[in-house]
Length: 385
Image: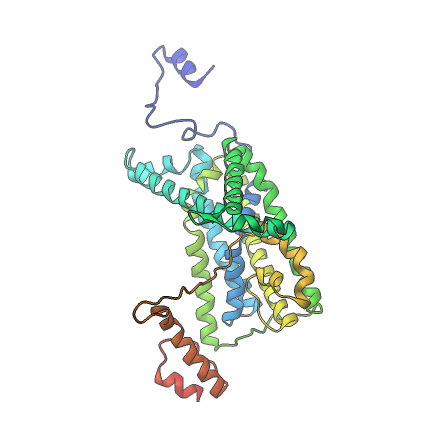
């Protein structure tokens, strides 16, 4: 007996029939709530384990923070995000409704269509961007495995060559098949992907640490800065974590609605945010610190491990598989300067961007001291001299 039949039998009146314009299968309260702690944990693993977070954490080390400072700042940031996710997840879990329905509280029944549509447009664009970036990584893997496919890259259509279109459309179809099976299919897929990326990260860390002789410093940084600057960067790192993941608080109810109880939401968030997320960025920083010890430079992009010849070439197998899994795989950006015979010619404005770094490099070469702030002030120049 349905709820409508039950209400009609109890009251003797016709049951309430909701407006079909306001509800459908996706907007109605979740009927099957079988997301366990590991499912939410894996969801956060799939969300956090990406190249952006890797580079972000590694960049903090290069900017002047040591491993312990990066660890504590990001831990504080993820704890704050954990608290906010629990607050937002509670309403989703209690009522089983997604973000478009929850937003009706603030925007009204019809006004809620505005944030829902804005989010939909962004999601469509992001879906295309992520699929394209993943297809670039697939192209690299295919060309490495079968060099004969290079002939498929000689002509292009709408910015993609034939091999690029095959990879893009194949990935688009795979993702469409997964999501068409519903959230249960998404749950199973991310349950696999989250741990898989951890295996790749651990393999990369072990390889780099072995190259570094199993000895790295947790208290030094390649570019030491003053104590005051370290504190500024420490709070800045917390702010960046809040800015990055704060937006997810709005629609976390899209996932918490499938949890059987609120305790499951809190436990899944605990393992996925303070524990997993902090561990991932710490491993990223350790890999970067290891690269500094092993190769004499801080490598903040894992792709560079595979691209460097001689000593690093033996790591291509580890990193090659990792590039496919790490955040839909940000491609290398290559700048191509097209010559012209028009008046003035040359590049023009892009040369302006390199003027300031060139001047600062000249100061560093002449004085041995690096100036890292722009605009270049007189007192900064006097300190360097």
